[in-house]
Image 1 (cartoon, protein in one colour):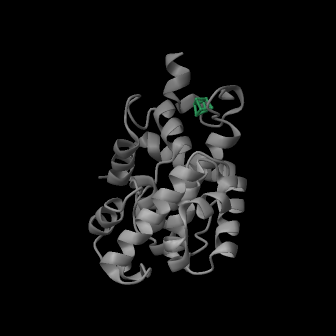
Image 2 (cartoon, rainbow, N blue to C red):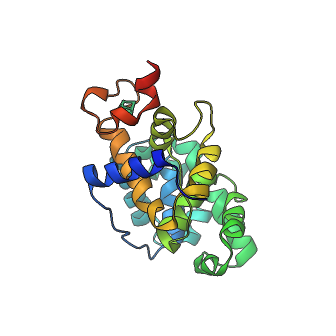
Image 3 (tube, rainbow, N blue to C red):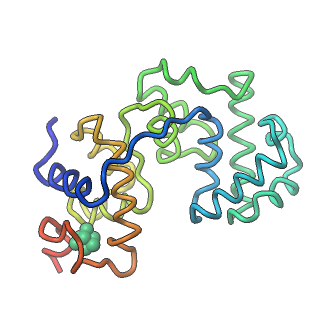
Length: 219
Ligand code: SF4
């Protein structure tokens, strides 16, 4: 499928507004997976703080997996929802270790995209967003992670129906965007969601996408 005129215009205007983010590469898929679990419902600053504390307290993933839960909760407390995240991280690490015998995920690169994503999503505590982040950022696979900003902005723009779930937005964009667009589109929609298309008060008057936007048209 070719990209719709709306998606094409949004992609190009976001590039003009925010530039083209270059993939930074990721040498550490398991670290990316754990960090993405830590990032749920918190800021980047708190995520980074909690992840640094985790790696300092437990340099090896085996130590994270076997740590007393209360100790792990204490270490990652700055990331918020520490009890829930500690339990998810340990459950995911346990499943990976039990099925693979180590914490190496490089082999995912050899799998077809959907199969790799299915495997990740089958891990406890890992949803489509987390799985897609690992596959896009670490392996350059043609997938489109949908976080809260991407979910909100795509629906406001009319790139997806108002009631589309994050997974439906993911599928809609993946079906039409050229693979090379997915990384810049994902990051630029997040930038736009943080800077302009804010959750509570979108700044439509200064938005470079306003003339394309269903939210403006319908309000
Ligand atoms: S016009 Fe308003 S609602 Fe539409 S993308 Fe821009 S800020 Fe968001």
